[in-house]
Image (tube, rainbow, N blue to C red):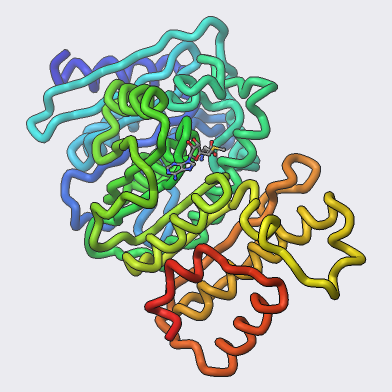
Length: 387
Ligand SMILES: C[S@@+](CC[C@H](N)C(=O)[O-])C[C@H]1O[C@@H](n2cnc3c(N)ncnc32)[C@H](O)[C@@H]1O
């Protein structure tokens, strides 16, 4: 399809009032402070308009344009951007333009007609909206092609959205003048990896390179295939063990979601060594301390297996947080998701400050691990930073 025909086809659909919502992103000039533009139809004083939400680096601006005047705006938008993702009443359309305006057009027809809401301020609960089909969520089996979140995948959808909120809150800590390097360790089926790529690259228009790493070869192959099919450049998936992964010199953000047991600690240690500015980590099962724990003063609690397991898990996350603090991070343990939905509900959020720990803080930490007879893997990994 030619560039001119592509714009014509899009405009026809918009003229037929089939647009539900769309995002135009990937600025042609990297220096452009306008990162993306969101489109949605709105009714103002009984007249059909297209609302443009201009997303600059730090501010949002809105403009409402009468449908008959929109054509000129579309022309300008495609002079500025190379990516389009649109939800229409009967299909989703994804367009990628090369630098020379070679058109890649992907359209997926929908079985049922999607309704258009013309309300001026549509309520938005999640960063990824429930009724918008996202190609990666459809491919990963979280959504139906019409955008309905599958019942059995609803917890995953909620978790991804919550994680994206933490990522969104951390954007100020990430570099603005160069590509942002992000690693997802123990990425598994990579719901989160795809979601953060979609959110930061497609929705926010940020220059990012994302790698998901996992031990499972088949799963990683499938993730790479999806990324390739969706033309997600700078998103890759690698097979490997976190502990053997030394391929980076500098990383800006490390994320983990339910990386098993000490895999979380391996990821935290890597993040510290690379000087990551942001670490967001939701740990999973914690067995290490449960095996080591030997504190006679706590026997009233630890005589009960269930209590011992929970105590060990909480103490493990406290130790992780303290170690990160001692090596120069500001750390908070946050509630990730309501306990009702998953017991794995603590998120470790760490922002690099570079502040050095003092002797007293180190002593406080040492007394605590000694009391528990704990020999944390993470402490061994961070030994050189703790002197
Ligand atoms: C519970 S899954 C979570 C997957 C994904 N983050 C999610 O939330 O859907 C944990 C993943 O960690 C991976 N994993 C565990 N230990 C690892 C290691 N040492 N190196 C790389 N991946 C590891 C497992 O293969 C598994 O896919």
